[in-house]
Length: 528
Image (cartoon, rainbow, N blue to C red):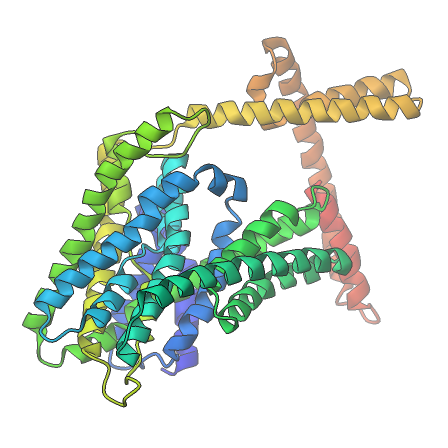
């Protein structure tokens, strides 16, 4: 098997793991990691030949962009304090604790190298957390915190990692320079992200074609990441900023086709890239096994100790931090998304799985220092990092569904239905307002005006049937039955039309482009 065949296996696994995961209630990323481990143990499967410094730039931008599309800037802004308290600060605490323990138990491990280890195992993976949360039906407040934690923790951890690596390679460390680098990296990333987001938004207006606009959204995350890194900024934070800007200002309410096609496109990208990323984690087991080199007992002991530190620190931090967040939350006039019960806190604790970023950072550790000497204890650091990744991702990923079910933590469906009803009412009122505006400038027949008024009400009822009274709901149900019958008949008519047009594609003298254009018109009509 060569590298290309291995890539196709991973892509196929990414597609198949989704229905398999749904069938058995397991996260697809965890299944892909297990597939990677199985492949790594087979003799005919080659070692993955990807330069470590390319893993983050290739995989992280589309994954981050896809994750941010599911949220909004206002959600982050409203929950900035819980995210900082329960998430970002935890990276610093975990890094310090891991560094202290690693420096104590691994003979001769310098403090700078120990900090690098702490930084690369500190951030939970945003992709794994989002995938798990989506499948398990967790409360929205937990999903918000897990998304914010995963996205912003990578920014903090990667900057800490680079500072520690620079200190280990050069042999010197200056706190003032490190703090300045941290601030500069964030400022450059935010500025670059906003500029690229604004530019991409303007360019999309100029393109005015769904295919080109969606293609641009695939290029923008990579451009944001690479340009920010070139200017010594945080590529991760730049991608987040660009994606949040476009989510806030780059959406045209009337561009239905682009929105539908873009949603489908990014679902496909997210599924395939996530599958490949987590499959690579399992395949990199080759490297971890090779670094052990006959020292299994000793190195497994070190890895187990660091796993315990990572898991316990997260629990010991979340318990008091959640209590503080609740106290601060009680004094506010607005809602913040925080864990409200000890059960939700336990679920959040057990959701701290490590993934793509930790693997990439572990493999990107330099081989030599500036003086030409071997990087101190690089093999040990890589092995410990993979131990933490495998233990948290596989063990916690496989047991989290059971834990969630055991604790009875689930989304507040009543609150979601109430919000859905509120949006349905707002949508119907907006449609009625627009109808009145049209009636002010156009003279509509009374029959047409009444028909349009009913359709305005139907817009809301179709979203949330509970918004109407019993009589109106019954009337709507009758109209819905008639409409369903009309749509069924119309669907069969359109299907016959599509078959006829498609058959013409193979006829002598038929122009395939014209056939496809007519077929697209019929397809769009079928969506209405």
